[in-house]
Image (tube, rainbow, N blue to C red):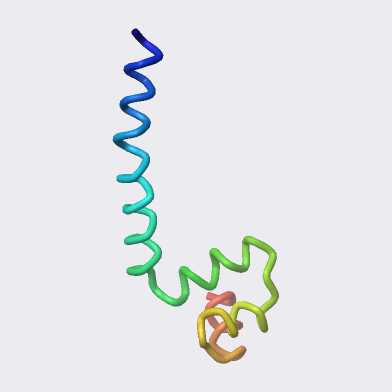
Length: 64
């Protein structure tokens, strides 16, 4: 019974958590997105290309 309850909670809350993560990413500032992508190991050039920013803007975001 406990396993069924845990599975039911997981199936109900997983879509909600995904939706929250997507909304968080869409409303995040460019500076925050740059820092998140930098933590994943992307270069400044790759980050600039993904976010459609200049490399100068990316370097300024990482410096702040």
